[in-house]
Amino acid sequence: MTTDLALPMIDPRGEACDDLLALDPAVLAQARFAIIHDLVAFAEDRVSVWLLSKGKTPGDAEVEGFRLLGLHRQAAQGDASFNACRETCRELIYQTNMVKAATDDAEAARHVRLAIMVARHLALFINGKLEVAGLGEFCCSAKGIRSEDADRNQGHDFDTTMTTP
Amino acid sequence: MKHKKVAYYPGCALEGTGHAYNRSTKAVGKALGLDLVELENWNCCGAMEVKNVDPKLQTYLSARNLAIAEDMGFDTVMAPCNGCYHNLKKAEYDLEHDQGSKDVVSRISTKAGHKTYEAGKVTTIHALDWIKESVGEEGLAKLVKKPLKGLKVANYYGCMYTRPRHIFPEKDQGPGSESTSKPHFMDDLLAAAGATNVDFPLKTACCGGAHTLSDSDTSTKLVLNILMAAEACGADVIATECPTCHTGLEMHQKRAETNFGKKTSVKILYFTQLLGMAMGLSKRNVGVHENFSDSGDLLKARGLG
Image 1 (tube, rainbow over the protein chains, first blue to last red):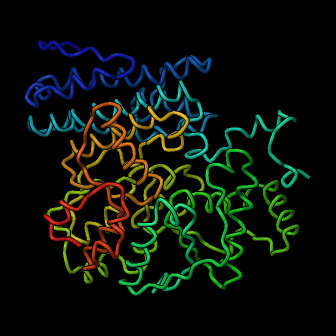
Image 2 (image 1 turned 135 degrees about the horizontal axis):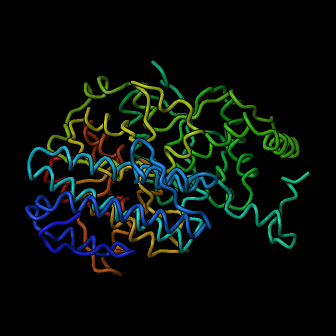
Image 3 (image 1 turned 180 degrees about the vertical axis):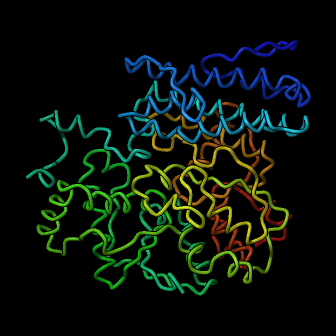
């Protein structure tokens, strides 16, 4: 997507989101379509990086017409903790739809700002998960993140005699 | 009236960092004419720590609390903390679907000398369900003495209130039920008290709460984004319904300022504190003085509390 405006390039850590948020609302409104295109591409890239880190090939399948949702579904298969960002992905699509449907510049700029924050949140979550894989494991997915280790580890330092026959 | 008298499971956090939530929940219940009967000799729900090490032991710990509620003659237990609520629901689900969990709960319960809890005897509800399904918005609106008029609120539900979806079979059941993708019960209640809910896109977004000690910077960045998004939406206040979310938002708001130089001024209050003040209760009655975040100026300006 091209625009006459020189927009900040969104970096993998999403730090350029700060620069985007600092733009004047009029600029956000004028560049709305370029920005939301870049944000969705950025989000797809982040989920793809997560899939690649798991040895999976990011697919092109769409869910409800959106590749981002398809990628999220692919990432969450067999890994319920990834559902911790399901609503974030859906919210990004919602906000971009609202940008497309906006009838005036102020409304468009508001939804662009929210889309930027949502995309940044997705990046923060996935980047955090790349560093600490357990993010979302034992809260959102209700999974014991060390239970598999415990099964394997006979030298554990906690007492499982109560739960093992 | 549904839920006129229910068993109350405050959980550990509400006796410590979340004491303001405990105080305000009880105060609001009293003002609404609802009776809470605290579980006798309750224990930790297993929280994240026990679940982390041994999920079936966590199921037992939560099941014991459900067994206590049943023994006390209740078919409903209300847990205001998202972590407790989630864990009791998870235990219920596990005991219905997983024979291994049933065996473990039976074995430990026998060893401990108390009745083994069986799925289906006690229903766990959240504080939001409790108010919404007892007095409802209309009943609440009739009791409002100081409407939250003009107060712009971003409702933050956190993660464990809606995830994973399969342990909340009553949600996503169409009109009137709670939604896991866009929860609205807190929005509904605060709107009934006169507040203006802003369109907040991070209602259920991860705050990194469980990693607040192991990876504080990630938690701070996630929380900071939530705070900044709330401000961008025009919110004066973020309303919370979980002590872990609440404490995380408060602590990381401060940490974002000291460690990253990012100051945000949005206030953080439990939804029960807002409802209580709308019903004419004082700030002290609803434990505003026990919050870490100072919302005094905002409340004074709004004539609340």
